[in-house]
Every structure is written in C-alpha cells, then in structure tokens.
Image 1 (cartoon, rainbow, N blue to C red):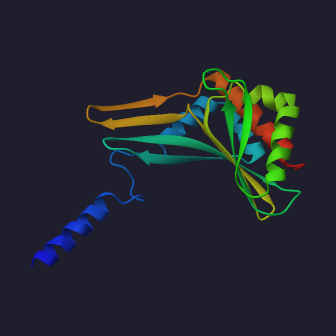
Image 2 (image 1 turned 120 degrees about the horizontal axis):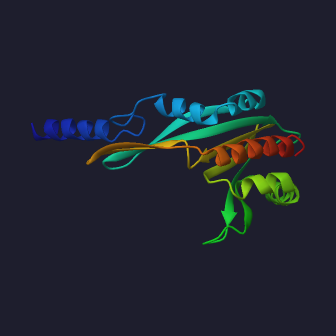
Image 3 (image 1 turned 90 degrees about the vertical axis):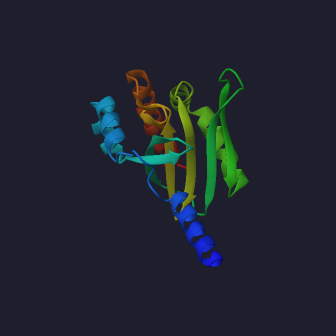
Amino acid sequence: MLTMVIATLRQKLFELFRADRAPAGYRPGITLAHVRRNLGAANADLERLAVEVIERTESQLLMHLVMTEFVLRVPAATGGTASFEVHHGGAIRRNGIRVRRRSGNQALGRELQARLLADSALFQALMPLDFKRLRIELHNQQWCVRLEHMGGSEVVNRMPAFRRYIALSPVQRDHLLASLMGLQRLLSTL
C-alpha cells in the first residue's frame, strides 16, 4: 500500500514539474502578435530575409517568461559542426563584441570574431542592440542564428497576478533588422 502511494506521489510530482508542459496562464501567439505589431513595416524585410519569429517560454516558481526568438538560416560555404555564443564585452559598459566557442573548430570561432569586428555596419548595429542571447550554429552546411531580444517579451506572474509585455522599441527594431541583415551577409561568405 505504501509503495503504491509513493509511486502515485512520484508520478504526480513528475507531471507537475515536467519541462515540456506549457506554464499556467501561457497564451500561445499573443506575444508574437505584439511583436509583429511592434515590427510594423519591418515584417516585410524579415520575410524577405526568411527570418522565423518564434515564442519560447521559461517557467520559474510562480511566474513565467515568454521570449521571442528571431531565427535566421544561411547556407554555409564551409562544412562541419560548430556552436558559438556572441555577447557584449564589458561588465558595466559595452566595450565590444565577443564570440565564445561552445563546440567545434576554434579557428572558425576566431575567424567569426575577426569578421564581426571588421564589418563596421554589423558592429554598429550589434553594439546598441539589447539582446539576451545570440547563438550562431553550423550544422549540415547551414548557419543558424538564434537571436533573443530583451524586448518583445512578456512577464506573467501568478502571485501577485500581473502580465506585462515589454515592447520592442522602434530604435531597437532598426538595430535588430540591421543586425540580422549584417549577419546574413557575413555568414554567407564564411
């Protein structure tokens, strides 16, 4: 009897904390609708670049976040597999762009870093861009850029109950579009 109670309790706990379960109060597509409204005319430019805009949720104790990821795929001139994270340098003030190799060819990471710094238009777009994550991956002769902006996200709290959308400002929208176009240009030759 005790074994059955423990097994049932364990199953209930597993179902409660399952990672693939949508958080309570999550409204699929609502954040994307806000982002598309913020993008305005830039939606056409993103479609021309073949950028996919997706929602991603992150659950926390009594709240969840809905983040927006901009996914760009570019045919690669090189083969292999690699993964890189791009972030701003500097602890308090941004003083550059850094590329951190997660896996793959270290020389390719150095080449990516050098080209990011050499492309002044891309560098000027990335420096003021408020991104949370920027991952660049190479797989099956294709680059995949995943850029998660700090704007275009929603915070949903259960206790106290509130929901807040963090808008993507027009200035950030312009930097985002310039960054994605610059990354497409840079990666198509790498």
